[in-house]
Image (cartoon, rainbow, N blue to C red; front, side, top):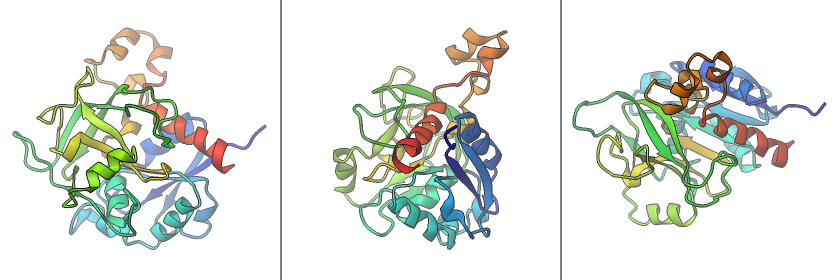
Length: 271
């Protein structure tokens, strides 16, 4: 029997989504383990990495920056340069951007995840939203099962999730390189810049970015909280169709494609 890909869910003090992330990893057909930030010995032996959400080190200074300075990130970055996949979710996305792994065009941070802008809430905002997948195949390790322009329901839960940059040419480069993986959209796939379609004011409706190689992705919404039909809110048609059917409620929701794609990438490229 082929060996399952083995993924490390890296836990930092203050994270709170490591258990959900691990469950999604395991359900997708991979093996996995929660690895504490200070258990760095042999972390390079894992086939891939997930950096979960939460508030690592209380998000002091700004979100994700202290976690990004931890020595374990040097190892993760080295393994990513060797092709292994790295998925950063919410706080994990913030840390990947702070380290410079995403967008990864230069060996330094090129973007920031700034405080949200919306008309109702100052700071932390939690809501169900929709993201739209890439318009064309982009070679990303996390979209192998995502159809072109597919709309996926996920929740957001952050106070600093607004992708911004002072580099006026960077957004054009990301679009040209097909590094903008998911954009905030309406249920029908329209990418309106206004709230609530764009829930935090991110430039170009950006919800997720990958590096140029496509094996590292920083995503602000939470796919691990939307990977099963039972997790979806009642307003989502997929859940309503499954009401009263336990097997259907426990089946995979579209967001699980991200973890299944990670598994397929490892099987094809790493193991």
